[in-house]
Image 1: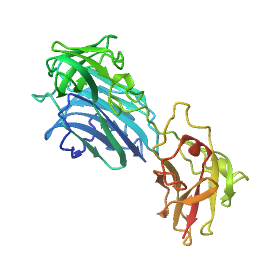
Image 2: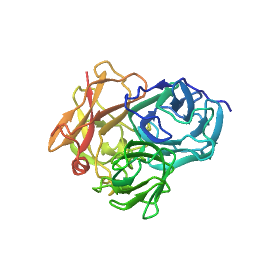
Image 3: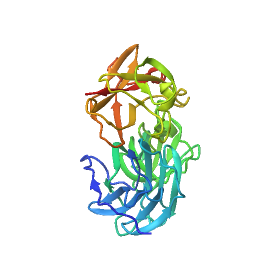
Image 4: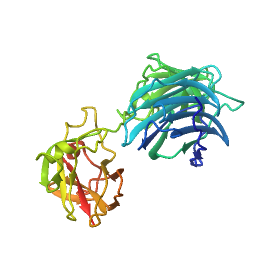
Amino acid sequence: MATANPTPHRLQQNANVRDLVEAWDRVLISTSVFGSANRVFKLSFYAGATEVASARFIAQTNTIELYSGTATLLATSPALSFPSNRYFVAAAHYRISDTVGLLEVYVDDVLMVTYSGDTKPGADTTFDSVGYGSAIGWYLDEYCRNSITMEYDGGSGTAPVAGQTVTGAGGGTAVITSVEGDATSGILVLQQWNSTNFVNNEVLTSPTLNAFVNAPTVAYASGFQPNSKRPGTGYVVARVPTGAGTTTALTPSTGVTNWSLVDEIPPNTTDYVFSGTPDTYDTYAKSTALPASAISVIAVGGYHYALRDGIVVNNARHVVRTGGVDYFGVNTAVSTSYSAGLYTWNVNPGTLTEWTVAELNAAEVGFQVRT
């Protein structure tokens, strides 16, 4: 079955970004509709103006397709259960090569599809930019790219060069893509890491270099620079109401527990809360705490699925309660048919600094109707 192939918009690269052989690209994406034809999100890798590979998220079939060039299908994932009506994290790992190439995709930190072999469709041996394209219904936010970089110092011999294999005393190996430095110290851009960790101050050798790995703090995971190799285990956690919050003023369509009418994923329209009185709102206690592995919070978002059936209330806004105070988002128009909406707090509105895990775990979230 042929799928839509939207034309990607290339993201401008900073002038000092190197030509890469291998990189990890991570993006926050969402779609409001699944099971519909021609709804495709496409993340593409470019060498100049040439598209050399892509990962396509196909809403019609709930699959991910991997391509070399623009038309050679490499692999297709099994049918997946994409998170509907909320953002999720997609990470693509690409290595361009006609022999040891790799293209794989993770969704919310789970490997969904992978291909190894020939991923070099033409003469280009490196790539330098990324593009994204979308057929109606997809949304993108929070893009980032990582490569593999390692610091070395205390060197002797002559400077390492691209194409050499570096080996750590503990058995870690990788192939040099490019070098910023000399025989004494510098930074190596690497590919084809064998997944054996490098360790600070261990001996590092290549055919021309004798040096030491410089990884002075725990931020140098596996011996590489911070923000190197695969982006950290970031993912979106959906936390639904599990109890009443401080304020309960909206009217339940049935029963007496408002929170239990708005706790479904995906949302349904058989039960709900409502009000024709402007500025009425609920806040809700949330589900269990973030996973124990969570060490930081990028943002907190509120999600709604709503419609209006009157003329007094035309808008809505999200509310988050933190530190004993309610903070409101901006007005969002509500249509006469069901539609989704999202508001994001990138920082804690009470402290104006990054959210902490403890603050998020203690926060309440909710929804207010507006004129």
